[in-house]
Length: 255
Length: 78
Image 1 (cartoon, rainbow over the protein chains, first blue to last red):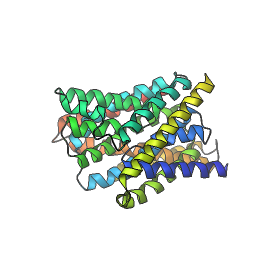
Image 2 (cartoon, helix red, strand yellow; image 1 turned 45 degrees about the horizontal axis):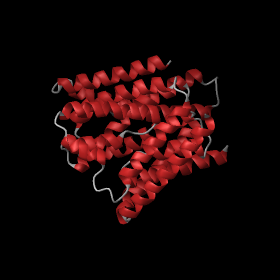
Image 3 (cartoon, chains in turn yellow, orange; image 1 turned 45 degrees about the vertical axis):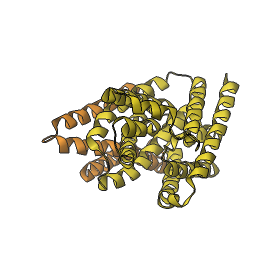
Image 4 (cartoon, one colour; image 1 turned 120 degrees about the vertical axis):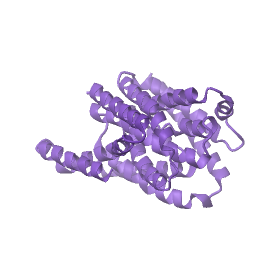
């Protein structure tokens, strides 16, 4: 039992560190690691990941709010749409068997890995978003999508929120990431409550992973600027591709 | 916001006392910690909604709607 808790702490540590260094939610690492390494069911891993995202978001958003970087009117408006998506996805996820979710998660990992690869100057999604005209409608639609993604797969949705705030709504990048940090906390909380009420989350596991996430995120946020971002992104993209392969293998064995 | 957090701790402790015969205290405390972490963004939104009631009516309504959607989701999950 203690060994398993230590394992969860280490998984959280890696997820928090990478998440803070690269500005992505730790869910991309936590969910596969909990299923593939710690042996949790996919639904339990998703619920645990959502609680960890709540914790890391609360820590970072508190700093951003104090510095006045969060665009609250925009955040509250889009938050409504992403929370609606997260609640629907959380409720539906209980009825969906885990096997298809492995494949959906693998596709998401591959898309993010492609976006992370340093040679890609601006991702396909980002270039398309920059051209759209019905900005508010697109932002609301993408927010619903981010919520669905969060509730269904246990990720924060920041990979969609930040490009939308920056490229579609024209927010400065640092304000977009700060606003996204605030938004993903509420989105993850809405999904996590559904998983918590349904009994998919074990508090002991959550606490170990959550403490690890916070312990990894703080030093990474403080000292991350000293590392070479190009190599870091390449290593992370490679890791995501490998995890995607493992998720597909796991899905195939459960067919 | 601080008052909201204190209210959450109070409610959590009340629930803990009520259910203390069911499971070990350590597990209950971990459950309480998990619940508080998940409730933190909601408490922040409650504070924001209350603060916006006078001057930013639309913002307050959106905050309230978000809270309602969250609570309805919780209710349906039961």
